Amino acid sequence: MLLDDAIELTRHAAARLRQRALDPEAIAFVAAYGVRLQRTGVTFVMLRECDIPDGADRLFGERLIGTVLLVGADDTVITAYRNSRAWREIRRKTKYQHSWRNDRHRSTGSGEATA
Image 1 (cartoon, rainbow, N blue to C red):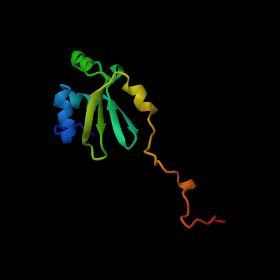
Image 2: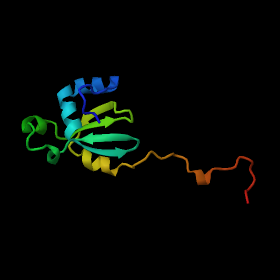
Image 3: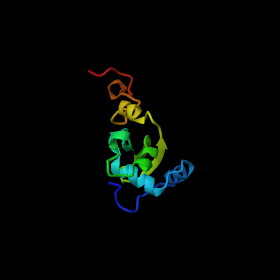
């Protein structure tokens, strides 16, 4: 996943990468070494300090600690951001998207009670 030379980006992701000074090398580094979590229908890829291997460029990697990639089901990067507390916040998210309506309390529409 995301380890080939051509990482697919949405237009939104490309704009955010420019705004946040993240180049393709940085995205490839986070994609290669970051930890992945499935939450709310997308994959979060986050680089933590403990994820940077000993053989990797430490200075480059330390600059990217806290970088998060949101990756869609088709392995396209949706957006990227930096948040040093992201690991904690992402783990708290629900694993799946939940409907606002609860099916148990849906009415039958006829106005009559069902038996």
